[in-house]
Length: 188
Image (tube, rainbow, N blue to C red; front, side):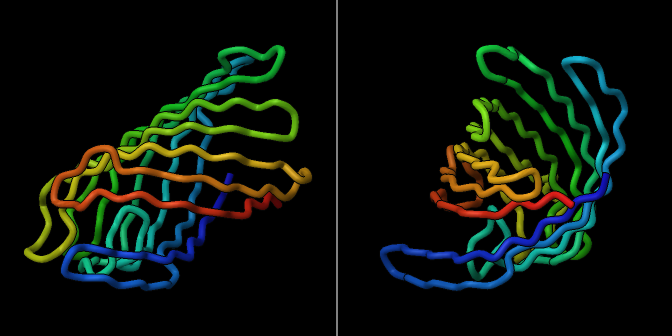
């Protein structure tokens, strides 16, 4: 399977001494995923991704230096919890992100629970980024744990629309914040 993502971001930064708003393409990636196994109620895969990010990448703040390019290898596992009266499932992902340039490499661990009644999908996620702390001076080196909730409407087999919110729950070298997002997913 192949997939891609393009994120347009608006970052609003407010402190007692400073306020700014910036909008730009925040990140893009291209992924190749290979399924390791698929059973009746569970599946596992490995994923390789090429990444590009601006200083507005998801999880960064405006004005932070960024090395822009990277690669990631990720292991994914998903399992059905129940199927009736509606589907409930969970996933866990673990990965290593190599940054090319000054940013620190990152370990990432994410967990998700989804509820799917019909054409709707409700998602609750915990996402973490842990710095390997091999950054160059002035470049990104932070740890972050955030919670995220979203609602997806599967309008057709090809198009889905998502809206959600996220909040930073714990951080190191990073001012915590919150955000909202909207998106369009397409399968082809």
